[in-house]
Length: 315
Image (cartoon, rainbow, N blue to C red; front, side):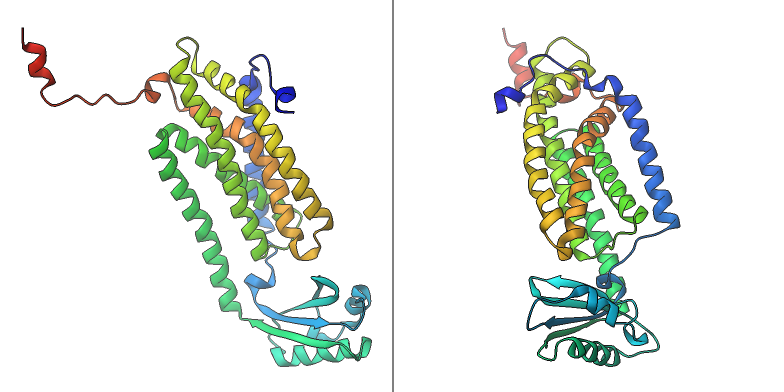
């Protein structure tokens, strides 16, 4: 399969780089605009609330349970399956006029009216202050990851490539968050884990391309920086296609059949993989060219040995 997907001739991928870069800029501006106006639909992990896990005696009717949770104490409750078809999680938002134990009692009464043999297995409360701390720590985790990646790529490659990789990662994160903001998809801790996974996935693809760019700068004595980058992308494209398709098969299965608990996680991965695949070409590599990457920047630094000048003067 690898040989079938292997490209025979160099493809000018950067031919349309300006147009695609403009599209990426519009996506970033649109995402920032959506985040500024609509914000993010934070889940209970960040806003705080009460989680009630219930085990029904038979397959739970989620539609009936949602329609039955109409009391003011449980207004806005989110009902989801948790593991099996009998296990259900009810997420109750924080309500200033009702205490958590009142909400739990109303939920229990509703559940028992549907199934008297149901069992309340777990009750957890997350305060609003804890939710805000989780949101702050989650954002800090993404920023620290980007800074560590910038340091790593700067030491491993060259600062122009490092800036390109970090710009591509920031592009992927902003666009993914913009999609969640635009469609108001609930953002919880599983989605945050998906965003961090996207950062790692996109970086892996970018590093593979950068490794080949550095190698070809040393091998190819003729040709411009654009030629070297196009050759490198062509040589790694078969690997990119196989990796992306294989990952998409798994993520699509999670998205369609994984259930409500990991739906947000799968959505983040699905969007991030699609955006991250082209950003490693049209954001990371193209920005490195615009920053002036050249063959001289890839050459190893020659270290002059001690006493070499005296040896040169000897007859």
